[in-house]
Length: 562
Image (cartoon, rainbow, N blue to C red; front, side, top):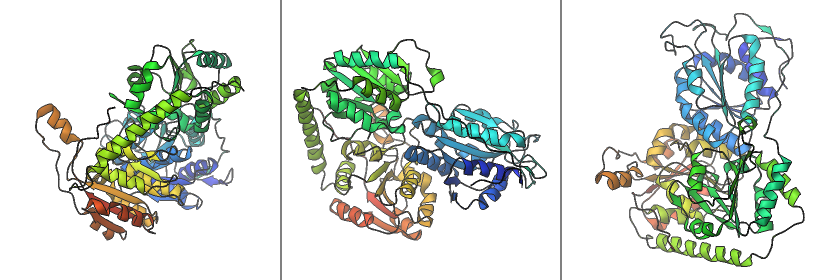
């Protein structure tokens, strides 16, 4: 229930009224003088949980995680200048991940001098900067624009291909308790915007259906749009009904369960899984759904795709400029619903040979990976592959694993089983370090009954560990597994391969287990690989957050060639 229309309010209360009307449940923030009027409004809104971050970048990372996990806009609130600038990484990441986020910041006064407090020469530099990493970036200049601006922000964030928006509201003066005003004003009625999605073209659907039925060996490429629009069940139904193998880019892992008979594997960059290399040469139609045209994911996939490639793009409707059904934009869920409806009772069974072939290939791949992990069971420092294999043994189908950027991510992709879109979460194409901890906190807040395990290297954890105390404050019993090798380990082989030596990649790591205990949590340090499973199983039963510090080093990734 929002504030009463026509009641006298200040601008901070108008912002909060919009949040209430939009059903916002959480705000991720760090306080600052330019946004204290909004804090005053939030003080009067007890149904909105205020999550105070200790590092400003984590506020936007948490908002991104919230948007991905719930499908509702994650809201972050930061002060002018440094607060807005420090959160750009999380907002850019949300843009790449198609995650709905409403990013609200304070701003210097409209008539600010050069070098004003939290300002530079151009008062609008943050608005201009955010135009490159958001769907919409704006600066409110009149108090009577706030409600309509907030409504438009929520509408844009959720429409078409979801993504972040940036709204900043100037302070009246550096010392004023108000934004954009000196006296309270009557609150106007709030009018939420209508959420738009790219419509389905039934003519195109019919043409695609006929192409699919005519193909001898079609393959589906499933993008993150299917996850964002919660259309994974429809994807599985289409794949099963017509015996169609499924591939996916690395930021869509979990779009189909890895134990599904027709789930192949992920791809990224120059990495094409042996499963994909074995099946794709026979493909005579590739149908991509939920990917965006002209992206690196499309280019990487087209390097091995057949000439007959149909893309149902995941984008805003106005970006569909093609008159060719092979390059269209449609909402992934609406498209899959329409395609299944059009196909009706028709089926294309009889591909048991293909199913068996995929099963044999997957079994061979799993055996190779397991053998390589077990060969390292006695390695000290601990081998990341063996670590990930042992962690996987402790997981259940509902577990949520969140990987940061680095070697932990690269090894985990081989060993963590995929049961659903939350089985293995990664930062995505933007690939910002410090993803794991903020996302783990949000995941546990949204799913307190599920095990949440974060994987992170020591370098990435050092960038974000200030908010481990936030996990303790919120009593989120996450398990944060820190791979401690005293280096930015992924840089070592890259430097060695290109220059024959390393430079500037090693650093002094603290005792992370002791840090966890200093925060009032549980800290465990593992140096013996035989202790991994007992430590993880014990941590999953704790009623408080746990840091498991694993002493490791850089090792080559597993080889999986048939």
